[in-house]
Structure formats: structure tokens, C-alpha cells
Length: 267
Image 1 (spheres, rainbow, N blue to C red):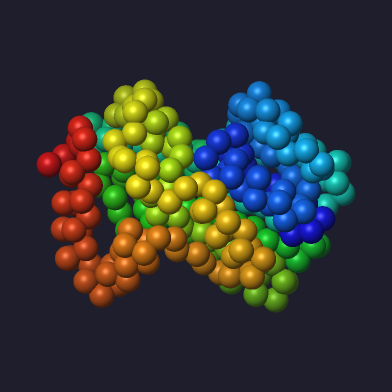
Image 2 (image 1 turned 90 degrees about the vertical axis):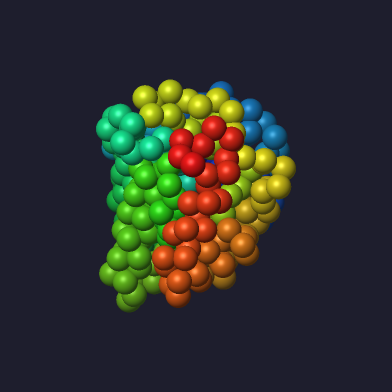
């Protein structure tokens, strides 16, 4: 990634922040995007010696995504890698879920990826660069209590898989990265049935893959130009494998596993 221009959305915390640090350690030039510009500026200060620009961006707003790419090109003249990492989660039964929550997740997770990719495409094609979608195992198997989240992640995977095939002859690299449960803020700020943040994670974050380890694997996959990355064994690779061979069994296993969460919306 030496001297490559890397745009990262959702860079103010979690996997996005770790990706910024990881790409910086590999010599990249960074364009960081998030709604919380104060956190991005703080991150900038910790990335001494790195060329970096932060752009306040709400990826659910098309004009913000256009502006993000314009600022990247204005500063560096090119875009080599786009990492669509910004995202929001939820936890509630669909029967109780306000449809505004579904729309919010689709606007941030799916449309944010579409908007950013669209406005980065001319530059990525010119550079024969890379577009990354950070999804989740929820983009391969449906997670109960997280219908809108799974829907958005499945949609991203379908969009990027189709984009990859469209560009078989252009040199564009498309990576779909699916972390398993990873320690980050995503569960603290996940939305409840009425759209409020749940505030506390229902899972033991200390037993999860760290954001830093996750970012390291994603950066390696970008450099190796892999088409997909599924992280963690039991909650990642094994889950996807079982879903192909024993889907009914996996449904029951997932239900039982997710029902063990504290204050689970189902039992």
C-alpha cells in the first residue's frame, strides 16, 4: 500500500479506525470519513508522519459521498482503494421493529456503499484499484433479531459480487470482507425496535477478535487482491460452510446461540 490513496468510511472508531492505523503503517495516504469529525481529527494527530485528510461524511447522504471523493482527488489526485466500512446495527424482533429503523440501516449500510462506490468508480477504474465492502457473517446467514442488519449486508454482498463480474476485464479488484463478531462500538450504538441506541453490548467483547486483528486481515486481503474474506473459524468459516450443507441444522444452531444473549428479544 506504499503511497496508495485509501479512502475509509466509518473511520472514527472500531474496525474503521483500526483500518486507518493499519493502512498508515503500510505507507498509505489516507482519506478518512465519518460523521464525528472531532474523532477523525484526534485520529489524525495519532498518525504522525502520514499524509491524511479527514472529511465529515454521512454516507447515507449522496452529496456527502460525492464530496468525499472530490476532496480525496483534490488533495491527492487519485483514489486507489475505497473501503466501505461505515455501518450501523440493530437488535429487535421484526414484528416489533419500526420501519424507520430498517430504512436507516439500508440507507447507511447499503446505500452508503453504493453512493461511495459510484463516485469513486472513475478513479478506481483509472487506477485499476480496489473497492472493499466490510459486511458481516450476517451477510451470509440470517441472524434472528437482526433482520434489517442481515438484509443490508446481504444486499452489499450481492451488489459487490455483481460489480466484480461486470469488471472482469477492467482490472478493478472487488473484495467482500466478512468479519465474525469483532470487538467494536457497533453493538453499543445498535438500534432497538424504536430506533434508540441500546447503549450496552449484549456480548462479551473480550472474547471477540479485536478490531486491530480484523483490520490486519483485511489489509492483507487487499494487497493479495482476494475476492472474499471470511474471518474467525467457528462463527465465520464454519457457519458459512454449514449453511451450504446443512441449512436447517444451522438455523436451529443460530437460533439457540443468539437466544443466549442477555435480554435477547426471543427465547
